[in-house]
Length: 81
Image 1 (cartoon, rainbow, N blue to C red):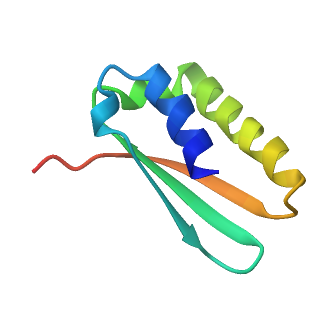
Image 2 (cartoon, rainbow, N blue to C red):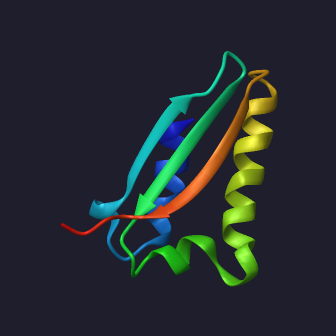
């Protein structure tokens, strides 16, 4: 599932090298996918009124229904060092 989310997000952003996707198991049936992007690209990933983020979550939900597992997708700004 991480690869699917990373592919979608890297197609949307201006700085695909800054996209990081990580997955953490909350329980046996629930996983959290965290997507961090460059601060400049965060708006592109979320979209107007959150429509793009909602669409990404819908794609993940439809894909995960066959796996009988729930995925939560979170979008965060990458911390610049």
